[in-house]
Length: 520
Image (cartoon, rainbow, N blue to C red; front, side, top):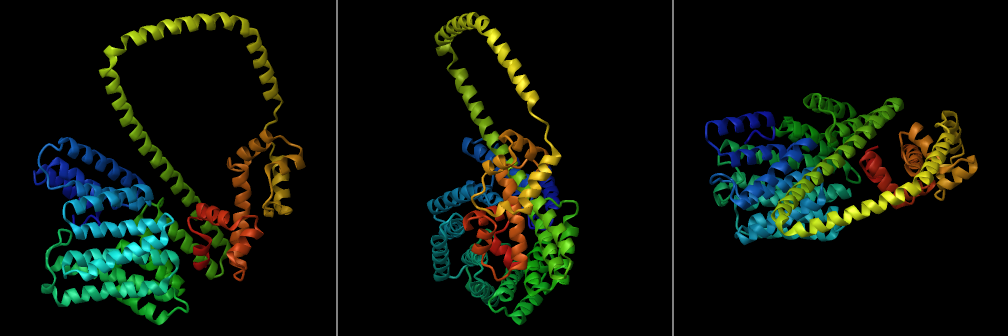
């Protein structure tokens, strides 16, 4: 399983081979497959990992695993949490982190419980409890640093600091990132110098030797990338220090991996090294191959748009931004589709339980069924009698409805062009008070006519979405052309409240206006 992060296909082949020769049982094989899927950015694989883990939990709780396995409940819960973290599905991510923390404490695994407390702290910052989440992360780090030296505590502390760095980067607090990244490097260097001072108590890390050296280099490289990105974005930026850490990162083994190339790209962007950014993304794209419907490729398109803007190619920048927006919409659609499939699976399971209960209670419901049949026959008789009296009226109503429908004109492209042109030319969309009725009154059309026009000529958007798309396009223009305007001023000038502007912008482009401006 050491290769699953860099070569998942090979990992799956190894798992199948180990199962065939009997080195692992069916239960463990399924768990390992879920582990490979859980670390994939592909939404389909993440859903597959969640499905497998749900089945494993069921088999574990009912004793249907088949034979004893080395895989425990905590390992399965960990994979579920990892999968939901990859999907950024906060509610189940938080649920399984809390469940794991409780389970670890029950089993006396305090370091593992603290590791989960760090996850809880990170999710809290995402769900509106920012300060509380950061405080929890600080408590976890302090508790791990204060305890006796051990490999497991060191690893949990590094992970907790990475979670804290993520929060600081989200906040744009780059000055706070640097000491956290340096603390990770310092801890690893101390361990490399004095390995015997650290208790070997970790089931997560490989044995002492070459694999342990790779572990240290891996986390140091990540810390160097964090520090480089931070130095390049502090106020004022320190490009000298940023380049020093970029150089260390590029010399590392991790820096040459797919994950490493993705991780260092923001540093090149922050340094304004557009050609190196484009070259890095070319490497990433080559490794993605035909798989371009993912967040990594969306980031590539966004960065290429920024590079084209910086290098004076506005038309090319607009094309990349449009492609980026389309991918973001598709990713959002697929995420919703995946959620729907998950809910459908849950519903199916509930339906199966219901059918079983129905079968068990069938004998006790015979009298009720007979009564229901008699009642149904009576209702049918009454309905048949009343139907003959109402048939003529129903026929009349149907004919009237046909005439009404026939009178509704087909969507008229000329009418839509006139309405669309007027809204854009007179910038009616800039008014925060603009309502659908204003357009209906001005052009003397019905609500249905407007809806038909939008369905036929505006990609089926609702009136609100149609107007918001114009506002967002104007906002993007102002973000590029008016760097002195505050985001509140931009929001109000294009017809949004500041809160609605932020929500609509992030929904359309996958980032907040602040993040977009920082990347210009």
